[in-house]
Image 1 (cartoon, each protein chain N blue to C red):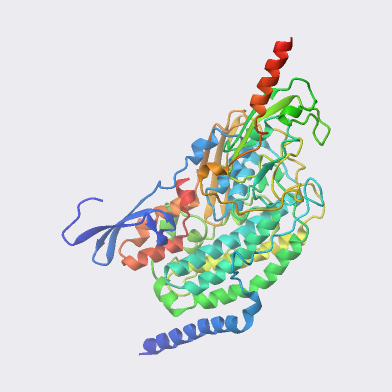
Image 2: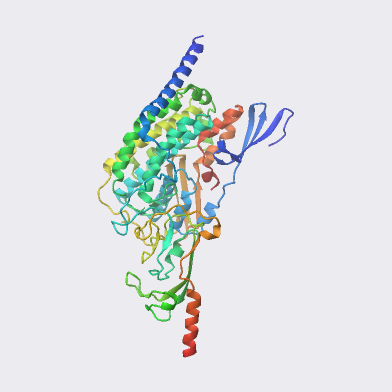
Length: 193
Length: 373
């Protein structure tokens, strides 16, 4: 008999207690609202200043980007990638550290390194990428980074990059026509010699 | 499954079922509503983690450990780097150790919040789940602030960390803890003492201490059975011996020691203890110290093998690494705590009703990514 009434008491009191908490949230927690109307409203991104340059580095991992003008084709990022989503092909440049206007190749990086190689293929398959950020650390020229990274001003943070087709997620960073242009130049040189 | 008698029926739960917490198939033999036998079938999420690790370098293994237990990635990273550091005999500085402990304990809070919240959800309590995920979100924001990723961090590296703490992290964490501490009591009242929840969990799926030990169950599931065993206390790794915290064990407040309610309650108590540890670690956090200080240029452990274990939110997480002196492990084995927890399911869930099986499964807090690897 006693058990019967304690059960009723416990049920009612615990449910009322739970309802009370819900009611408090209804009254009090207006400014603590967590639901956002997504496309119109967005969560603020955390600000973060540390890393390569203390004022401009942001660790947010959104999308890999390569500044081809700075890339020397050292393949360090390709080797660091655990899922092999970076594919690089390089060819020897005719003259070390010289600009090749025909294929828009820059001879000297912004760090002052003279390039010995021309990158003819630099593909990153972002559908394979696991966003571990391991490729960005070994880069000697700091030219591969997550957008919103060291060059945050040049490439704003963007994380909404859905594509209708999977092949659209393969980003080709190498200059267009670099391979053909280089072959043409070499053929011309051979003909002259 | 054996011989099925006249009134018995074989029923499949899963693999696509929200209450199985992933892709797990449970083949149950039922006699009416009563379960007589459960056979878990796993392997739906098998990604060849161990074999794959033999083909990548030691740094490249870390992103894969993230993906094993995707609800507690920090602690998975932690266990792996502790193992490799032991193998290479690397001593890391105090700041790194403190940051690692802060991250691991925050991750433990996040993981237990999800575990208890989803446990309620399995039993039909939707509101506590939303409350818990709201607060878990705040922890994930802290991680995003630190390393840029929300779930799969690759934050702890062999001999250090990928980044130092950002500016304002300590204040943000203390803010969060101040906000969060009163909420734990709220969760307890909202879910733990709710009569419906107690009726569904107390005295259900009792796991006696002998059964838990015989099956190798570890972590909160073992402690709920009344065994005081926590690697952070009993075999301290990193700097856990510096902190003052209790190990909550199941006391059978609502029913018998080792029932589903105890497993829930131990997790809730562990959240309180983790908050304590984070506060102490932040107090003692050394101001200076380079997080890349003791990172080796090239990770090439000497020939030999190591077994190292750490306490993940799900229990005793072990890594066995065999090195042949090259830059890739020649064998890497992970001892998964959730695997043993799933193994005990048949033992403790036999004889209970169909609806209780899902309650027991929820209380064990398994993650299929870690079981299948």
